[in-house]
Image 1 (cartoon, rainbow, N blue to C red):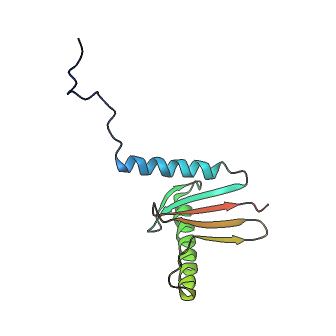
Image 2: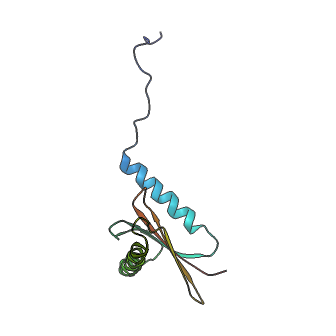
Image 3: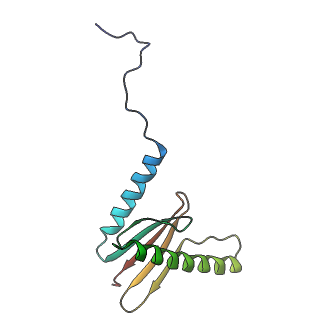
Length: 119
């Protein structure tokens, strides 16, 4: 016996927006971690709070996140003094042993910190 056409077929419930955001963060985190030279990854929200990190110690993660967020804020401030209509997207700092990349995702309100070995 067939169902009447007025009854919609059963479907999956739509995922909650929170679940979509979590999946996006997890996907980004894994993609960054799989890059060959990457040693550390921290993903933070716009308030500078770490969401995901490869650092094992929570205290180290919070400290590093705060320092990188401060560096990003200072670079963004400097850029605004040059051109108030421009926005910060990425900062790359290279030392002899490491390279730190701070990049933003304004659409999702995220800040990505990647520490990698320089090529």
